[in-house]
Image 1 (tube, helix red, strand yellow):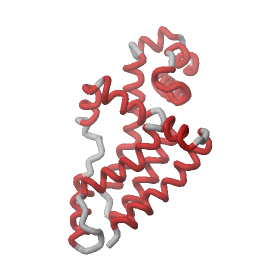
Image 2 (image 1 turned 135 degrees about the vertical axis):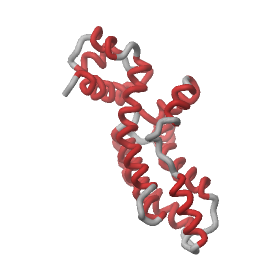
Image 3 (image 1 turned 135 degrees about the horizontal axis):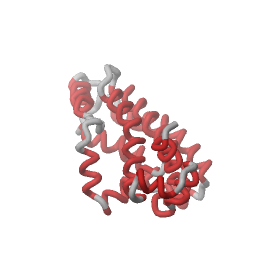
Length: 197
């Protein structure tokens, strides 16, 4: 494992435990088994490190999502595959959704550059497929973009607002993760049943 991989693994561990605000560069250096000077040589500050960790993690998710969007499966199968893939990914990287929300407000330029990345998931083929399945009478008439927004909202929101969810439902981290595992199937079933002709 090279130094950058050690730093990414350490940063993910610390960010997952402490979040962006609570994480300290010294903690990340200690976790990686390097000195703080080496960490700052590789990444000048915590913001740049977090952005690099984010892009590294997302580069693992994006191909999975694009493969689902562009496969030959039915829309219903793609919905099920998406909820399973996304939720599995975020359970392993729970610090990412709150970071994206934070960056939308504090660092919009990073968010803009992220969405210009050629590997960002492109749902255009899925949107066309939804329209075709509506015409074929498989799916009820619905705006494909609204359908995608429903899927994203139901999968993303609990993670983006996990502290709120845990507080309202009076659950701990273990119970939250159990609920999220269950949502892989529940979300897909709810959406499919609501749009099935």
